[in-house]
Image (cartoon, rainbow, N blue to C red; front, top):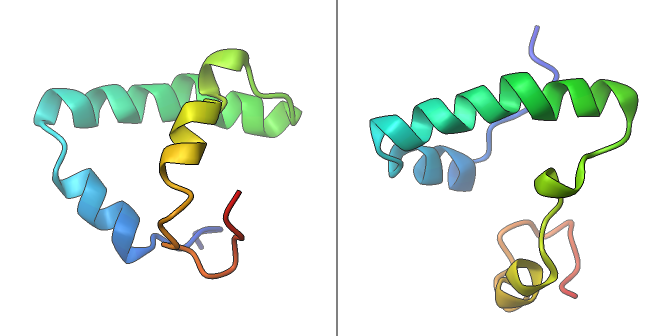
Length: 68
């Protein structure tokens, strides 16, 4: 049983990736994200950059997350 729910925004973004990008995404999730998730400590390369977060602050894709 999955412990997550893929939101429409994620599914749409994933579909727009090229096959190479999709493969890279899958590799990073399996080799970096999942192990870091298990330890509770995310390496700096997986953290969202401040500029990225600020660029999306006007978007409210997830109504449960407040804008910065």
